[in-house]
Length: 367
Ligand SMILES: Cc1ncc(COP(=O)(O)O)c(C=O)c1O
Image (cartoon, rainbow, N blue to C red; front, side):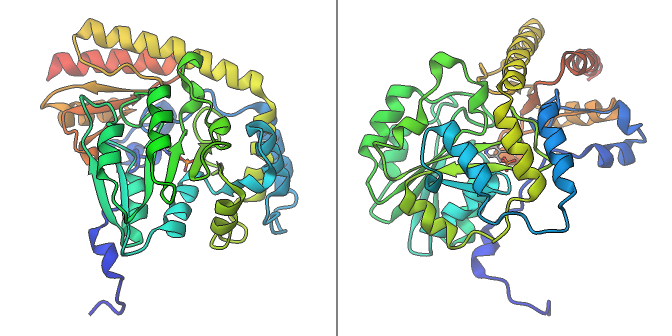
């Protein structure tokens, strides 16, 4: 007897596997936490904008009060950024929450959710929580197969999750193919375009997703402040869609889901595009540096448009990961994504990447 009866749908869910925390690694391997380099969760190695930090600290002085439950100032700032009406924006405790809210808005036991193989595991968790049938469409040489996703859609399909660029591959969706895909998706099926890493993409490869909202009333674009804006610990994200869809999601959104510090920091972060440009430029330079390093080692890796690189390490990937942990470098093994021979490495600061490269070279030589 366990004293409770969990919903049957939860039987099919494996908990989310997160990057290994610094404190846990320090404890397990007896390493000074200050010396640990974490390249496992695609966080921002440059931290957050000083303006965002200041705003968050200022917000603490009213921390005894509930935040604005409607997150009005934040939604207005996000709406200005996206060129939409504030009623088209929903605030989230991270974009994870938006990904879950949309599932709970449109999915139930008699529906289907479709997404690509090798995509963010929160999609499957969110859909399964609602009891929906999940269809994972195989990639073509790691690229999302949009035609295959369309073929997997039946009359019960109510939700499709797409990521641009994708995690963990780092590959972008082709602009023209995406638009053609949206034109052919049934109008009663919501398409989530998760742009958690969109800020890192090459300008020429980007899709103006906010403009697409005018054409496609079934589109929901999600953005996060956890990556390029460096607010992962504060939890801030948002979704943009039609007023009608946002209103429906708001019916089940927890009342004060975005805390005061996150609201204040996110507004300030949006206002500091100079910091964002520095983040994106540093990431590009360092991503190229890491790519050249993997080329030199003869390791296959995917061309990334994000702030991480997926590398083929081979059958010893799990051992390489453990040896790297012993040296105080946390990486993300991709076994939980069904890629046991691959490791994902977040692009760190120039100093962190130098430490990573030295340790990685030593570990490969030793195994
Ligand atoms: C593809 C993708 N979407 C969404 C998220 C969620 O980010 P957050 O909840 O921190 O906004 C992540 C985080 O790793 C991600 O990789």
